Length: 74
Image (tube, rainbow, N blue to C red; front, side):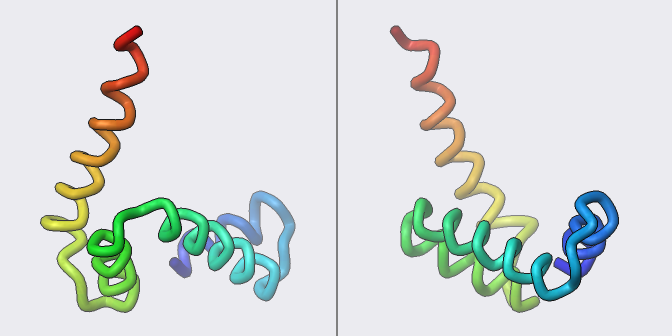
């Protein structure tokens, strides 16, 4: 998250507080859109305790595949 904050500060000229608020806003938005179990895994991964390489990524791929797979089905 520090890398993202640094990029927001560098590329958009945001101060540290505004960058942090932007990240928290986006994460809150994303978490609201995810199923509860995946949202919990995201929280765990962001706090350093999760399996971001395994379960979270697999669940995200599955969800995105379902969403994106339906786009061309008309």
